[in-house]
Length: 215
Image: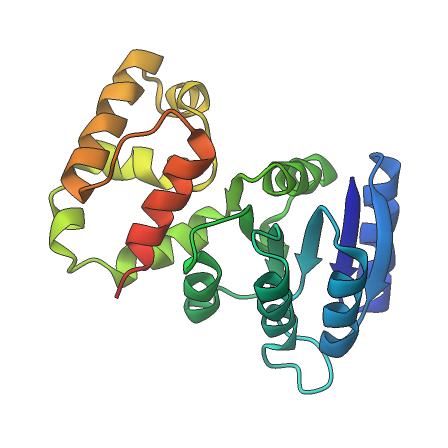
């Protein structure tokens, strides 16, 4: 699996490269600036991009803007954002087209290498890997959305775990529910949000996230 990595801190960048290669990934480029990231993504067409939001030269949003620009050239390019902060606007932009793998992790909440590697694999496969804090921010920003207000507390719990990319079985284990009970909650969520049910986990999560992203 081919990876392009963008991180401006040298030690962190080298550490991530070492970790990914140790787990069998082919890191085809490891860059430190927005322009270099865009060039690498267009040149190498990786299976997944791991991107910091704030990169040189201005340390604002170069990383994400480069990734989004590349995604216009390479539709569905899987992108995993690894950031220090929850940037709601950036999450909205990532979710806007509802296609391809999407992830948003917070650096200080990635507690081990396996968690990170699992997220990279999930996003590369077209799934999602959203930090719960990012999901909580999206839910909070849409708190006045009438369909969301119809959800029960348990349905909101299920929705947050769905948005993390968890399967029904994994959600059931986390919430101490049977898989069939999770399925019923999921069906209720889709009905209340006006979404077409789907057996495709990746599509259902992206659909829900796109709904949460609506202003």
